[in-house]
Length: 370
Ligand code: NAD
Image 1 (tube, rainbow, N blue to C red):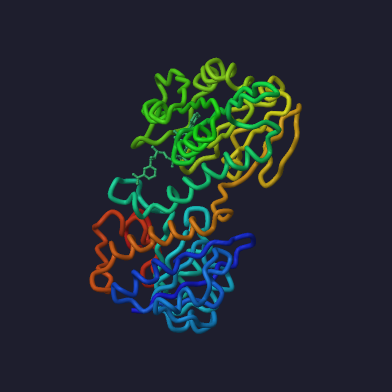
Image 2: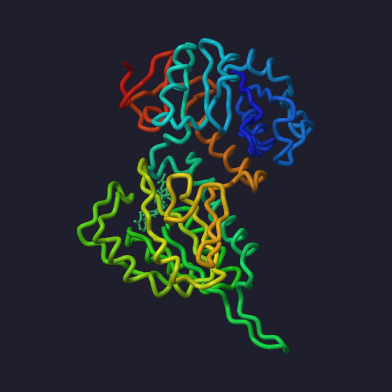
């Protein structure tokens, strides 16, 4: 069974789906590994790092032609589809719910496709969950970006020239990214506060030494431990409880998302007007509409003295670690799906069922083959 690792072609992408260390482990499991020339160069992996562990480096066309399994991070695109053959197994993020035309095109090719972003959020799938592994790095990077954009430092500093008081950081949303942002800002010496609609995150926040701002969530629905869209009443109570901290914060990081929905607006223009002059707001939910009314995806705007950065989660900016973690998720996933390099095709099993989007040219819906 040959696994093909393709170079990512999406603009700005620096990661590679399988790092040399994980390629070595796939070879030890009995797979042959083919790597497209230069695939790892923007993640600091040389072609020779792959050939040294027994992988074969080849031109793009050869990888497409010879591999049984093709692996990427970003969805396969039109150029890729021209080179895909019947019977090949594709593995990448597909975001299938918002890309029905891509799924149709893959099916028309007679291929099979697994989507990594469709991983069920259950305990035994945690080590295959690419959204978590990448969001964790994004939470870290958001704080570093904030530190760079701020005109203040994080820690308390007592110097002969005077005392510098610590910066105040406020985090909205204590999911994977939010938790790592709290931990990073704490390590850098900031005074950190956080809030989340899910009250079970209070303990996690406090265990990192940050203060949790509790907002009464009576009457709010959740689904399997995940947030659902909040009511207007909740938004009002949240403003009441959090505004004091918001108006004192030097850095605000928003990460609040609702699976499958537009992100909730948590900070309005009126609130921004009351924020500290010179404060920085990093909106990690910008790609899903943003948590701040004024944020614009991919842009830094200064409004009412606040620098608002609308950014998507950007694990590619730490591509060496991000590639390593994505690759480890892929290795665990492949191990889960196969036995001695042969696929088990256990469609009754939840992880296989949820992630298998197209099987032998047939689009699957709700886990059932059409
Ligand atoms: P997410 O990216 O969907 O959302 C980020 C956070 O925003 C969540 O904590 C959510 O509760 C919060 N939020 C949403 N609306 C809000 C609002 N109006 N006000 C305040 N906060 C709001 O979440 P995530 O990072 O994917 O993780 C959510 C939880 O799922 C975490 O506890 C995580 O550990 C868990 N998780 C488990 C698995 C698994 O078991 N395989 C995988 C991934 C995540």
